[in-house]
Image (cartoon, rainbow, N blue to C red; front, side):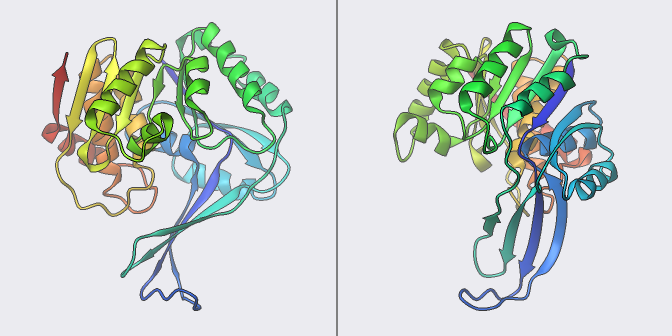
Length: 310
């Protein structure tokens, strides 16, 4: 199984700390980390950190591509790149001692429909029937959703297993693309069905409905409560041990990485879910968007409980 993570809209993830944050005032910040990011890159980094072969296919803005390349190389990642004009965007997360973290996102490069043809060219030498391709994060400006859906339907016809984790897709979009795996959280499911909050029954019913509509694996992340999975093997819920998180940013990306890592090893659905939750929980023990450590994944995996329901 070949794993390709496609990041159409990467970012530099900058984390800084303000000791005594005061709104409407000048605040002195200390930079904690500055990493090459974007949801697909985060998935690839988590896999790489845990010894799972994969390739990141990344679109880079030429103005600051060199910094991004150096960061990928420093993390030991394997990647292919497509370069466009403009800059890679930045996401700045401000951590304080007295308030919840605040995130500021800048706009990045714009693109057009020619980009997808360049993506197709980059995939030309890959056996798509043996490939899992992740499309995660926001779709960049200039790419119509109809073109994205057409691209994904083409991949599906070649036997590619598609993973989607993106707020750019509506519920109807997801069903049309027939992904192999999706990973919405509770809030995203609530948005899909027009609720402010979802009960467990509503989460379960929505997941089963998506499965019946053609989504092979519906994994709903439940934050610190773990995750649920609906697939051909049934309904599963995995619960992690309680941890004191340093940062939850990127935990969902790491959970996708865990699911793919287990699937690449031939594990069953329950073990894929357990590994997903282990990766996601371990990611919370690292600063910023740093990937989960293998030692933490192994330790946490032993403590995860998984329940099967009919």
